Image (tube, rainbow, N blue to C red; front, side, top):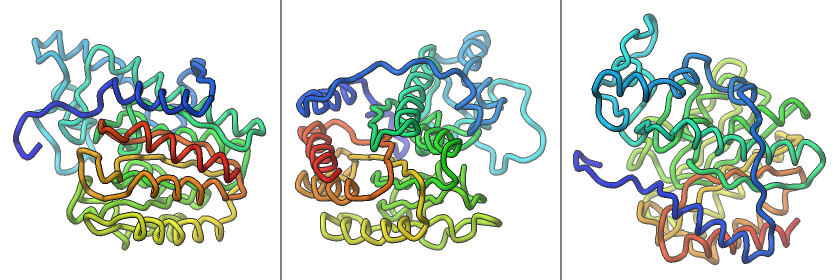
Length: 322
């Protein structure tokens, strides 16, 4: 970060704390089944999936570092696809927050399987389902990882739901803009993407998430960004959420996918927004009132004393509103 080597905050303890919140609510966690590659390939390109599966072994054969970390970042990605592993690492890894280890492929497959399981549960008639995905996914494009995200779990869930309904809305309430989700659906009018996040002029991902980004081609008008100023708290977030839900209501989706980030918390180590635990309860209550089925996909939210409490308060209020 800012040129300094620091530990990546996307650590296993996150899942333990979130699972603890699930147990406090009296909910039973289930292991997702392996859904195969088809749901992933409906969103991600074949060469990208092949890259994630094989690049670590290739990197080690070159005598590379323990994990795959790109040393080159192209300023455009059209035309020739690199043959060299170093070139492909730069092509597919947007930043250094997505090292690829020997275990990455299995981890991201399991995370995506949870998202697919939630989508299947909703597609089969449930009013809601929650997927405890780790690592998160909303920064991942069809062929590029970034920001701790390798496979776009929310996009995979939305595409899975599209097999059952004509229109799907994706609401992203993570601290950071879901640029990968936006990119996947930016030219489509069957999936509406709406995001409430800290202003990218000041925060990652910097180059995407501005209010002027409305979609392209058939997707023009089907992307809606609601950036908030640094330090904004409960009132500003809830006001933006009302605007987001009004846009979603006008779209009349058959199902909704919620990219549930908890890193807007005042106590999150990223420190971009100042939403309280009471605020997360209010957010959960408001989203729980939507009329269509909802697949909740866990995104960010990093280690703090209130991480588990925030999920507990959000889901508790969400379920009460359902």
